[in-house]
Length: 141
Image (spheres, rainbow, N blue to C red):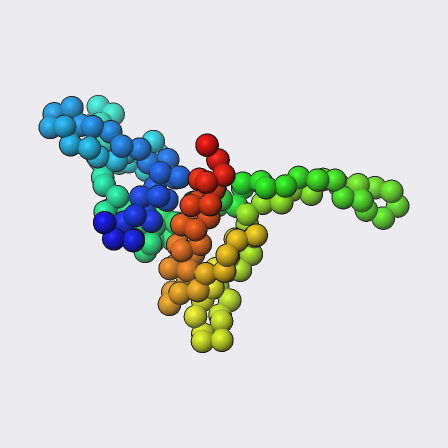
C-alpha cells in the first residue's frame, strides 16, 4: 500500500470512517456516519481508502484540520493587569498556514507541531495532519 493510501486511511479512521463487512458478498468496505452517500431504505454506498481524497481535496481535509484545531492540550489561568485573571485554552490550531520557505514552497504547522513543507499547500497540510494523528494516536488509547 502506498504512503498516500496509508495516510488517507489513518486520517479516515480519525475522521470517523469505519470498516464493515457487506452481508451479501463478504467484502469489507468503509462507511462514514455523515459522508457516506444516502440512498433508498437507509442503505449507504460504501467506499474504500483508495477513494479517500484527503490529499487532494480541501473539502475532505479541512473538516479534519478543524477537528484537530479543537483538541486542547493545556488549560490554565493567566493573570491580567489589575488583579484580573482569564482562562487560557491551548489548542492545536494551524500556526503556519501557507507561508513560503526560502525555496518558495508552502509550509503548514499545527501549534506545537512539526513544520511541513511541500510543493503544494494541501500536500503540506496533509503531511501535518498525518503527522499529528500519528502522534495523537500514540498518546491516546
